Structures are given as structure tokens and as C-alpha cells.
Length: 544
Ligand code: GLN
Image (cartoon, rainbow, N blue to C red; front, side, top):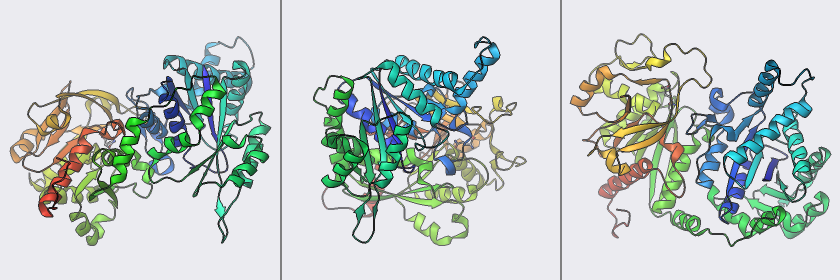
């Protein structure tokens, strides 16, 4: 087993997840089997109960684990699906240690951070690498070096490097090199301090990844090299990029792939970046602008809808058009008419998942606007359930139709609690979660979009479309075209609309740069087709 540890210094939010994913991609491009593990040093067992405002999107894995959003980055950059063991939290580690203690596994010993907690951490890393069949495991340590919370993890990694011996482990430290003052001077002091902090706990970084607004000059690289005891060629500059998928190539251009293989004694075959480069070339083309409205209640923090924006980036890299995302706070919509008129000019509308009553009326308004104006619409999870509410109110003329999540006593519960959820009391990990099989109706729009009638998609919900209303929906033009194997409504569409599709599951979690999700592609294509009709361009588009 070879291990690459990625730690962070100075501040959080430096794109450590993107760095880690990109390093993984460098190895994968050389044909080396690789996997990634994220350590989140908080006490939550998983991210499922965390507010998106604090922590960004909750990413759902095939096995139903509600994970940190970096797992989404790993899946997208590596092009491989991960399972819940790849997101390790302090909560999980302590739970395992305490369960062992209660069982009597420690045979009368005093149970301590060192060696028991650190031992559990090391055991898990080995197990995850082995189960993934990887030669190399990248371990990203969440938080910033110096945090009390991450100490046991860094200590475990230091111990592991000693146990594995020379040439088995590489430490990559990501830091910020801020540019300050009127002449824009790059400052290395924060990096020096954070490397000193790392060395104080016995870890000497092999590679420093310096983040910042601009590329580092050779003399700044030399300065960091001198103060931090890292060769100059191992000080890597990663300035902000227009799109995150550039990062692997930025690293490769500075020789990071070769550096890592040398450090770990791995074969340094020439990397294959052909498909990746093609994606970026198409992405940069950015030929025709379309505006996609995303209407949600966490729009102030873009990370809350990360997988949606990435799915649109994937479409851009596939179609060569310029997809502009316009974020609408659904709470503002009912009280701000100018937002509605702007929304009306959008080329497509997407309402993502969500929970609770806040902002739902704005989502309903936005959906109504898309439906009645023929604007392509994709409703995901709550955006699917709200489309049922909107349709029931406006078309079936049931003005008080609602989901029982918002109004438990509604006379028309078009969305209601899943049967098996009725006895559930705890919030952690108790929804209908993870990959489930969905069967699509042959001849439907969605079946054409997917090019097949059996799909697997990831879920995260407690409520479902109430089957009692389906017949009325169908008669009025909203038809169920996808069901789970046990008969739940998974997809509906309005055949008379250019593109009006709602899905109970979360397609955004499966979109990848090399294979954009078909539903996002279809939404974007429908938007383009509609725009083409409204404003035909001289040259025929190559996008058909
Ligand atoms: N709140 C809805 C439910 O629990 C939708 C969930 C979601 O959008 N992820 O069913």
C-alpha cells in the first residue's frame, strides 16, 4: 500500500478536495489503480444531518451514505463510484472504538487516543485501500493543520508512515500564498508558519501546493523551498482556474505526476489525458450562451448545489456552448416581481432538492412559469414533488394541494410520507437512500433521453407522490414514465411540453466530465432548440 496524504494550512476553502482529486487523476492517467479517502474531523457520524449552509451539499453514494461533498469531486475526477467507508469522520472512529470497548475487546486496558483511536484510524485506511483494490490511496485530511480536532488523524498518519517505511508515503501540504498590498506582493509567511506547525507534529511535507490568485514567481517558489525544506521543483503553484477540471493539467505541467511516482517508487508511464483534454477544449469553446435558472433556498452558498453546477459544466464540456447559471433565492420570488420577469426570460429552469416549508411557494411559482411558458424544466426530488403541487393547484384546480411535509393537514396531499417512514423517529441516515433501480416506460421522453428503460439512480427522500392523484394527473397531461421496482413514482413528464420532466432521484450525483448525465444534456439541448426557434442563427448548429 502506498499513501498520499493531503493536508491543508492557513485557511480552509483552498480547494483541497480538488487538489486531492486532481492528484488522483494524475496517477489514474498513468494506469495506476488509485482510490481516495476523506477524513472529516467532526463528531457527526456522517454529513446527512448537516445544514448545507454550514457544509455545502450532502453528496449521496450508491450505498446510501450521506457524505461530504468532496466525495462527489473524487467520483467526478476519478470517474469511479465510491462507498461510505471512503468518508471517515471522528464520529465513526469514536463509535467503533466505544463499541469495541463495550464488547470488551480491549481486555481491561485503558482506552486512549493513542494507540486505540489512532490504531482504529490506521486500520480503516488499510482496509479501505484493500477493499478498493487500489495500489495507492489518497487521504485528504479535512480542516486546517493546527486544529485540535484533526490531531489524532495526523498523528495516525505520522505513525503509519513510520510503519510503512521509506518510499511508501508522500505528504502534500496545500497552503495559501496571499497577494497583498498596492503592488500585489505574494506573501510566504503563512505557508512557513503552517509548515512549521506540521513539522512540530512530526510530518515533513514532500510537496507544497501553493494556492492563490496568480502563478508564483520563481523567486517566491525558491523562498518557500528554502524556508520549508522542500526542493524548489516540489513547490507547485496552482492559481485559481476558470474551471476546476484544468487543475490536473496545471499539476501535470509542473511535473507533479512524475514527482509522486518517484517518491512512491511507482512506474512513471506517460500519462493519457486525451479525453480530459478534449473535454477542456470543447468546454473553452463556449459558443452560444444559454441561461439556466436554478431556484433554491440555499443559493447564497453555491456549494449547496455543487453537483448541479458541475453537471452543467459537464454539459458545457460536451456541447461547447456557454451555460450561464443564474441563481434565484426561492424565498425572494413571491415578493419580487422583477425576479419573475427575469425568470421568464430564462432558457431553462431547474428546481433542485430541498426540505421544509421555507421558500416552497417561490419554487411553485417558478415551476408554473416554466410550465405555462414552455420553458424546459427539470425538477429534482423536491423540485419534482413541487411540480406535482403546482400542477395539482393550477391544472387540477386543487388550490390547497400541498406536500404533507409543508402542510400536514392539507385537503389534497399530492405528496405524502413514504409508508416505511411513518415509524421513523431519528434523522440520521433514515431516509430512502442510495442507488435504486428505476424502470422507464418504453416510448417515453425519458426512455429516449437515457436510451434505455432500466436505470439506477441515487435517492434521498422521505416523501413520495401520492398514487391517489395519478389518474387525474395523467388525464390532465402529467404522465408517470418511471417507477421503482416496488411501484413508487420515480419520474413524470408532460408530453405536450417541449421538456417538462420531474425525477424523484438525484441525477446530479452521477454526472461526470467524461459522461455528462443524459437528463442535464437533454434539458440543455431542449433550451438550445427553443432558443434556436426564437432567434435562429445563420450557421446551422452542430449540436443536433
Ligand atoms: N423533502 C423531500 C423529501 O424528503 C425532498 C427531499 C430532497 O429533495 N432531497 O421527500
